[in-house]
Image 1 (tube, rainbow, N blue to C red):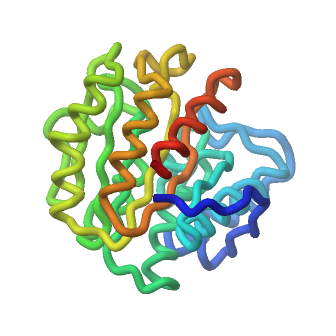
Image 2: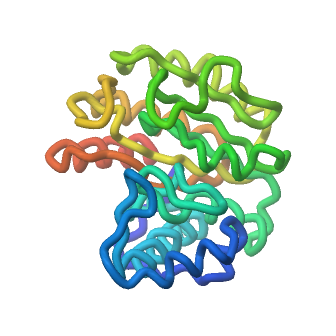
Image 3: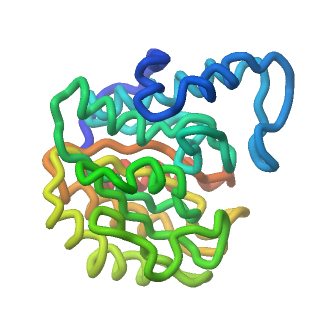
Length: 254
């Protein structure tokens, strides 16, 4: 369950908090941006991007402190330790996980990602770390080309789903694959990388999850750990996104 705390602005993450995940040379590259540019083919940045990315990571940190939902952009789950990718500058969920371990004393963290795209950055950051579990349900084959069948290890579970899947397929995959694996890992904290671009009608995906589906996924996630937080990832139809987020909030608090 997420705590029913009032919506508010958050503090920016510190550079040291970011550096638990990202190399300092890359952090300084983002800090130094002083004009509109692209960090890769899909990732625009400007002179305000460093501040925005620090605030997004700070919101994720506060979410794990308060068992809340970080409604922030830019998203983060494609960002690698050393570079930006796919709209993502700093990996907020990963930064929040490291903060939980370093500052809150939570040893085992699980991250469940239901964004339509595979969170390649989160997977890569924690691939060799037995203290952080990562599970992703995502469209396959699709951008960024990772997370395919058979890709995983003891603490990495990928659930590639064909285009056109909706509530039934997502809930079945969650119940049969994701939930048992998370329970076996027994996390002290669960962070949900809550992307909503798998939603019905979303422009950057081909899935059909409804508001009711996101509500039920969130309700399931809330039952997997005694402490739960969520971080906004994708979701690009601004007319649908508020309904998807509201439904997830209802599920987390059911």
